[in-house]
Length: 217
Image (cartoon, rainbow, N blue to C red; front, side, top):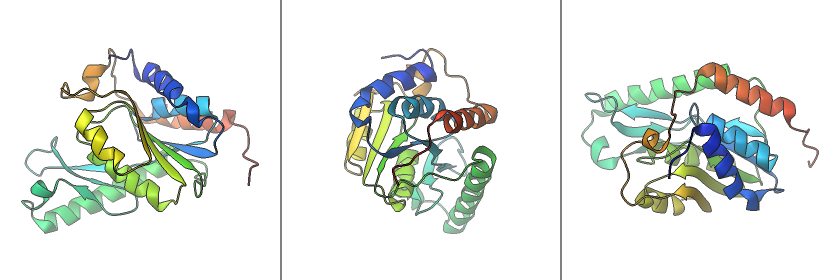
């Protein structure tokens, strides 16, 4: 399966999540690439849009190779085999830098108070998954917010990674679960341009402006 772009993937994903329409909940997008999809899902389900901002930690000698992911709150998630080979002091410093960057991004992107998800449905959206480290970190963060259920929603994920995530959440909704993964999320999109900070800010602001006030509490 291929998607034209993130907006197309978000619209298709929103349709696949139709069973959750009408439930009280919050859509959490992972920036930056997950935000265009999260905006489509939030609009379709009439839920507020917020962010979870996990940060990857790359190998000290191969930064593109992720060995851990750090949530905004909660413990980091690591590839245990790689973690055991890394200097613990270096890893602690890398984690501190990652958390500081997550805080910086939240201050940059979010201009309104975070919606309360306690006792409600949390839907975590990204544009795709490879190793699953970042999503697992996002799940840990979401769990600390005490939702009633956690749903992971992604257009494409390797079949084995999707199965691992299913053990950690209530539902994993995917449009494509290839057994033989192509190696990168972008290979499943015709257009996979980088989402800019300005786009993230605009999408969040638009979602906040166009949604009716929540009077259920």
